[in-house]
Image 1 (tube, rainbow, N blue to C red):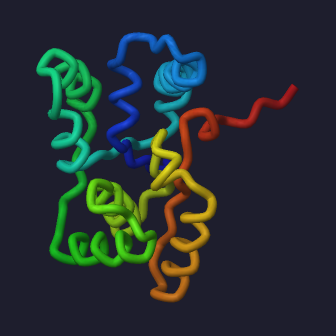
Image 2 (spheres, rainbow, N blue to C red; image 1 turned 120 degrees about the horizontal axis):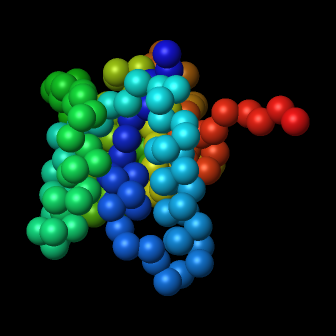
Length: 159
């Protein structure tokens, strides 16, 4: 069974009230549909990084986000993961506020996750940055996770 690393935007979209912005509302619906119809095809994992991010902000909203994560196993963090996260942040030229994004990527690489599921299309599900990551991982002989959104991680429909 393939593996999926659940990044913070996923429980955020699951727990949020429907957005008044049509694009965000569409992404929220896609996340709920994926969770309901697709997730059982995968083994899901997350990390303390996701838990920490999901815990921030409004207490009631944080509790809703954490509720979506409660049964998902957490990947262990190692010194190797911390070092790789620093290198990924440098490689992708992530701003300091996006340092946690590099940690999600590092864990996905080291734990050989098949997919990293996210709605962060600025720093993660971004084809330009993914090309850099593929080249980096190839050079260092590291596993490369596929970074994608719930809208794209779906079983093919044959009609």
